[in-house]
Length: 67
Image (cartoon, rainbow, N blue to C red; front, side):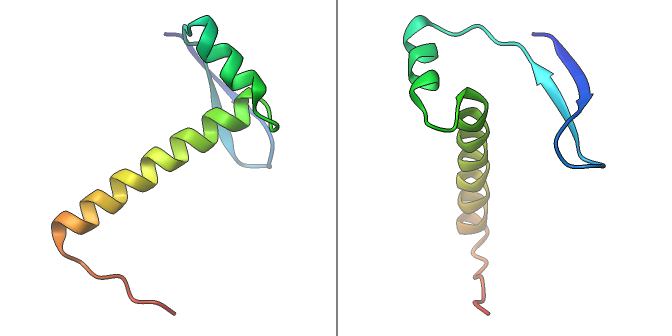
């Protein structure tokens, strides 16, 4: 898996380019997303991170207060 650090989007925000191998079905699914493959992958990763954080908070028993 190769990565390349590049500057993209917002000033001061660094991103990395990551090459991965996908099946044809996975590629078709990503390309079918309205926002494009990059947006779909970012959304999936963000959702996975949010689910991990939720699981951690449930295990720790911390309650989040609403503003």
